[in-house]
Length: 198
Picture (cartoon, rainbow, N blue to C red):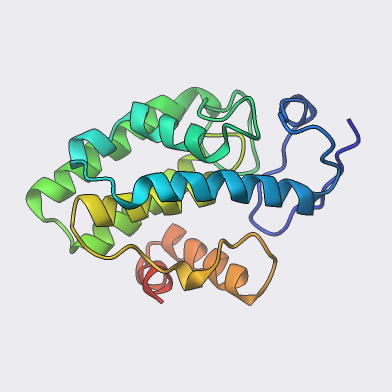
């Protein structure tokens, strides 16, 4: 297929079968792919802006899969489907459904019991979702939009700013995001909460 891309720090490489599921003909560079994905994502963001759904509607496997399909379905055949390959990040592919169920149950408990403030509940959910790594690609962007939907719909607060970046470019903002994720991996969620709001 001729798709050779360099992967930036924190990005998940696609295997050849996953690359073969590209729905857009003529894409040969990472930049072209990013443009097509961004157009698809913008449609999903526009759909989500006035979404008014409860936590028990958002926090379902079905909603999580459908949002990924909305974000990437015009670009990738596998959009909205759990990955069937092992990656450089994430749980074993056979554990995706189990770990996602645990995350959903934990998050509903946090909401019902006001275990943490709203921003922290939402960012903890986002962090664990990206670490499960449900899909072949797009997990970071997907988990950030899930967080925006949750904070807006469930908690009636403004969506996060994420430093006004999609984090696709390997710049200082992306480095700060990856560092905040790594801090959260080590048990310190505060840098990721700060990053989300600034």
